[in-house]
Each structure stands twice: as C-alpha cells, then as structure tokens.
Length: 395
Ligand SMILES: *Cc1c(COP(=O)(O)O)cnc(C)c1O
Image 1 (cartoon, rainbow, N blue to C red):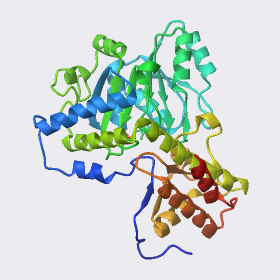
Image 2: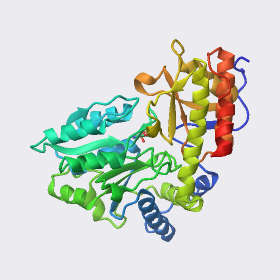
Image 3: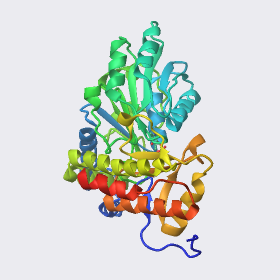
Image 4: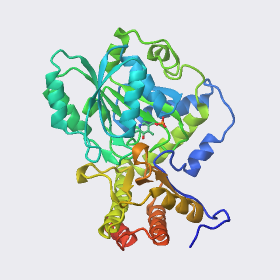
C-alpha cells in the first residue's frame, strides 16, 4: 500500500485546526458582487455579525473588527491598551503564547512569563502567588490563550479570573479565544474578561481575514487614557467611523460569509454546537487511547479536565517521526492532518475537529490514520476506530 503516483480522488478530508472547512452556504454567501459599506445588504449583514458575535461570546460591550488574521487581532489589542515599557504577564501554554509574547516584546512591552508544564497548562495557584507578590501593580495585564492550538490543552478562564480577584490585582484580563470561539462556551462578561481576541478561520468557518477584539468598558477607559499609536488598529478612529470597525475598506464579502456562519450556528443552537464538538473530540481521544495501549501514539494533554474540544495533539511513539504518516495520508488517502507546531513539529500530529465536521468525517480520518500506521509499521494498539464508534454510539 504505497503512496499512489496519481493524485488521489474524492473529497479531501480536511482535519485542520485552522483554517477549517467552509460550509457550502458560507462559500455561496461570500461569492457575490462587490459592494461598498453604504450598501443596504452589507449594513444588514454587518449589524447581524456584530450582534451574533457578541451573543456567541457572551458580551454586551464593545467589539472592534480588523481586516487581519489572529496576529493582527493580537496587535490591535496590545497597541490600544498598553504603552511602551509597560509590563504584561504572559501565561505559558505553547507556540501561540510564545508568539504572542514575542509580538508584545516587539511592540516595546515588557513581558513577564508565567511558566507552566505545557502538557498540563497553568497552575492557577502559582498565578495567584505571582500576582500577590506584585504589590506595586507593575503587571498591567494577565494574558492567556484559552485553547492552545499547538498542544490541545485548555485552561480554566473562570479559575484564572478567580485568582486575579483573590489577589486583589487590578490587571486587565486578556484572553486569546481564537480557537475556542464557536467550539466551547465563552461567557466574556460573566468571566469579566477585558479583551477577548478572535479571528475568522477557526470555529467560525471562514477564510482567514477577519480579526476582532471584544473590549470591556474598563479596558476602553484605559484605552482612552493612554497614548495609543494612531495606526490602522486604533480604536478611537474606529469609534468615530460609521461601522465602528475597520480603519479602511471593510472586507464586505467576509462579512457576508460570517453572517451566514453565525446564522448556521444559531440554527444548530449553541448547546448542540458545543455538544457536537465535545462528541467529536471524545471520539478522537477514544481512538488515541486505544492506539496508545499498544505502545502507539498517545495524547499530548495530560489533564483530563483540560482536553480541547477544538483540536487533539497526538504524540508519536519514541523513534517515530509524524511526517511520513502525514505525507502518506495526504498523498494516498487525501486526508489532511495538521503538523505539530514549533518544537513539536516532528514528534506530533494534530487532528482539528472544529467547525463544519461530523462523525462520518472524523471516522474517515481515524480510519485512514489506522491504515497509515499499518502501512508504515508504526506500533499501535488495535481498535482505535472501534473505540470511536463505541464513543459515538453512546454520546
Ligand atoms: C490560529 C491562532 C491564532 C492566530 O493565528 P493567525 O494565523 O494569525 O490567524 C492565535 N491564537 C491561537 C490560539 C490560534 O489558534
């Protein structure tokens, strides 16, 4: 069963944790003639995106959108809330917290790193100690990635809020929810998050290109006091514009797409949406548990109550590189697994299960991983697909 020379046929099963699959109706919504921001249809779609996104993330406060990827939303958030030289605390989770911290440093901020075991995520009591020790309140923000897309480990956003409160620390609370929005429940106002960062190409099932930050009143008050650079991301400029977002031409077609995706989410119902993500993630983990019993690939995440509903990171057995398996799946079966990120590149592969997916797609992916492991002689326990079937038949 060697890779065929001919290109594989059939639909590609795309198990990527971003970008994710586009529903056909989203593609159809995007495929329309150019319009400007005075177009009545655009105004309706824009208003429905503002309202739908706010409902989805549980806020009644402010929302600013940018034509950008998630990196732009990071930048837009940091430049509007902090001045050069100010200190932020970055909770370590994996590649995304590393990259976000590097960006903060590049913008002239001082970053204090709160270290964590990446297979477990932050120790909340450690955070409490660090905040208590900062009696001069030099830390202006606690920054955390809700769902670390590199590791498949999540952190408790409510628990971190409690730690900030318990230490009586006035730091702003900034959450990257890029890969948890529309995959697990987000309640920004209940959690008293001050800035919640998202982008279009993960659970929201869009092409990359729309970044956004939801902002609390408290954070907006800080923004008004500081000397933020008057560049593309400036919130004051956005507030003065009719669409209260986009310091430039609005990405109209993406807004039409997002409006349709939010309609699909509402049609499914948030409870069903999150249950589906939990179910699909559970099936993937059931398969990984079976494989690991035969000395095969195993879960990267070590803590059962912190497993991601969006993506599963799987570690190869010692001595085995993940890339030949990924290459075989892509070339022979037309199944796209995501690579590991950063220093996990060769040791892990990732199965994205966020957005427009169902059991049939996940079972197809898991089946082809088993076929691939057989073909390459990778040791693994039997019955991964069976374990996923068992999971789906009861959950
Ligand atoms: C994808 C992602 C980002 C943003 O990445 P972009 O490629 O710039 O869109 C940020 N944080 C997390 C957790 C992500 O998964």
